[in-house]
Length: 152
Image (cartoon, rainbow, N blue to C red; front, side, top):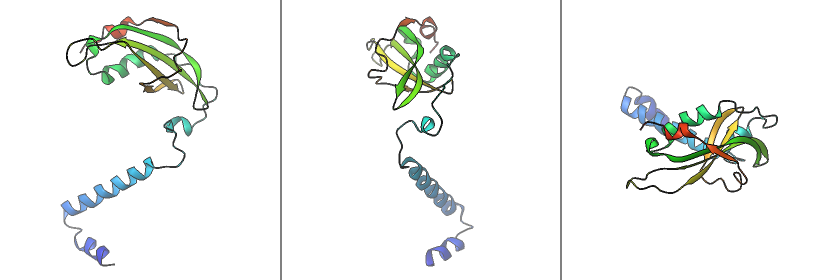
């Protein structure tokens, strides 16, 4: 009870109140991260992943996402993308587009071709996996010149 009384006495102190609110928000955010059954696909887990619509705007969405995702988007070369196909992802049928590109690293040299899997939920880009494992096996790639034309 003593701490409650002290808090009520300090209600005029904005610094103390701000610290308490910040601490409370941090605790609540961490509690949300520790939710049971979290499989890393929280958006998909809370929605029905059956009958997913085809992501008709997958190319423009990829470009918009990669402008912010890549450190040096103007240095991308050898870009190619595979049309999204439905694949099982942790027990759910989701549309997955596969992406390949090469880009310059911080030292100015090309780092080698990277392969990524992009997941779509409800017809929209949800996330990109840096380690696609077998999600991109047998993907049929086509040139993706729009990605190579990104301005830095």
